[in-house]
Image: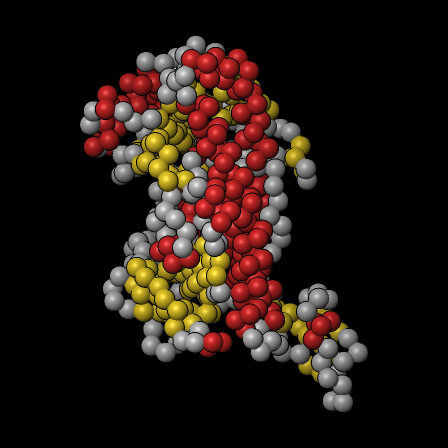
Length: 447
C-alpha cells in the first residue's frame, strides 16, 4: 500500500500460487559482484552462467538462497482445501521434489500399484493397468494426496508474512508510462497494491485472466461432487485406484492412507435429478441411488455413505477452450496466469492440480533467472517480459494437450450412446486408462 512497490504479487494461495511462491523462495540469487583486482571490471556474462560460486580472472560472485521476495494474496480468511484430495501423478511428484517437499508428502500417503476400471453396467473389470511401470525417467509414482495437507506443507515452507489472507483482488490496471509502468491491484476492502509482476492464480473466475483478455471458461455440461471417508480402524482397500464407468457417470474410489478414502462422482445433470443439488444431504442420496442402480460393490457404496462431503453439494465442470489458448495471451508485460486461471479442465485425467504444480516450478525458474539479471540490466521491464514469455511458451501446448485429452476421455467414459458404450467397454477402457498414465509421464524440470 502507499507508494511501496512489491516485486511479485501472486493472486491466489492455491496449488499454483503456493508452488510459485515456494519456487521463488528457493531461488539462489547472486550478490553484487566483487572485483578480485581493482583494475579489472566484473565479467557479468560468466557470473550468470557458471554456478553457485563463481571465480573468474576478474570477479567473484557468491550465489545465496535469499530467494525472490513475493506477496501472496488469498481471498479467504484461511487456506482453502476444497475438493478434499487429488490424484498426485508422477509429474506432480517431480514438481514437488523440485520444490523440496516431495518426501514430506510421500510419508503420509499410499503408493498405488494398479488401476482398475469397472463397467457400471456389468460390474466386470473392463481394464486393469499396472502402475508399477517405468516412465521415461524412472518408476511411475501415483498417490491420492489430501489437499489441505499439501497446501499446509507448501505454506509452512514460506517465510512468515508471505501470505495475506482476506485479500480478494477485484480489479487491476497498469499505472505509469514507458519503462516506469507498474501494476496496480484493487482489493475488495478498497485498498490497492502496486507490483512489478502480477501472477494470476485466482481460479476459474480469474480477474487476472480477464485482464489479459482470455475468455471465460466453458461449461462442459457435467457436474462433480466428492467426499472423504475416515476409517479409524483401517478401511481394507488395497493400494489401487478403482473406477466405475458408464450409466452416464464416472466414479472413483481412492484410498489416501490406511485410514482415509477419497471418492469422486461426475455426471450429466438432468431435470430427472430434481432437487439433488440443493443440499449436501440430497446430493449424497442422489449419488448413492445412482451407484446402487449400477453394478457397484457394497464397499464402494459404504465410502460414500459414511463420508464427509464438501459444503458445496456439487459444482459444474468448466474448461478453457483449447482454441482460446492457441490464440490468447497467457502473459503480457509483467502479468501472467497459472493453475486454473490458465488451464481449467475437466477432472478425468486427474491432472488439474498436477499441472498447477508444474506451472509453479516452470514459472519460478523463469522468473528466478530474470531476477538474477535485474540490477545488471537497465531495462527491467524487458527482462521480466521475456521471462514470462518463456514461461508462456513452455506451458501453452502442455495446457492445450491436457485440456483436450481430459475432455475427450470424459466424453467417452460417460457417454450413454449405445455404440460408444459398446466400443468403450469392449475395446477402449484399457486405452483410456493408459492415457491417464501417459499424460503423467512429464518432467517440468528443476528450479
